[in-house]
Length: 208
Ligand SMILES: C[S@@+](CC[C@H](N)C(=O)[O-])C[C@H]1O[C@@H](n2cnc3c(N)ncnc32)[C@H](O)[C@@H]1O
Image (cartoon, rainbow, N blue to C red):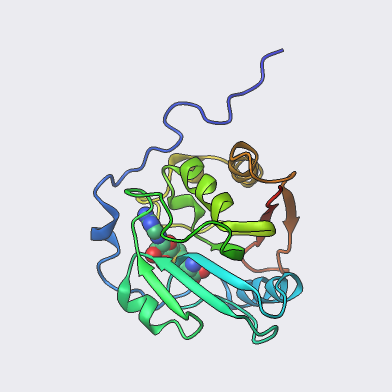
């Protein structure tokens, strides 16, 4: 029996190969899924986060979808547009960095309890490098939480997210976690509200 290669050639190809800074030059003060789906994500965060946690909102913008409670010690943000990041009321600090150009995260080892990637994973062309970095900056027991749905900027999304079905896309994200060697078995959840954009969550817990 042959097992399908989860990373076949061309999987990370994009229609627009120009550096990402051009695409993200203008701020976009929009949301990327239905309000009720955002609320489902906020509710999920509320179940997972704990008082005093330090969080990195990776691939961040002007909103982080975080609940008011629990109160957090630090929310750092990394994204592509400085105007969006500066307007995000939840960020304590932020940095502009193109992860497709430089996947090395500008944070010291073991500095976060959670790394969140909301509705953005489809834009990473070197996900394994980024996930190794996520493992490095997460404390043991910390979690990476990836949320994904079915909308995207098609020219900037990798081929997998343009062509694969949702089940395969979720498995691909789980494979990013498995291959980065820093996490336990990925957890897959479907928290899709009825009659709204779906919400799939893929979580990995940093192991020793
Ligand atoms: C669809 S938006 C989602 C924004 C936000 N996380 C949310 O949930 O509304 C995609 C985000 O991914 C970020 N992004 C896209 N390509 C990136 C890259 N190469 N490096 C870092 N961030 C990137 C952009 O800054 C943008 O904010």
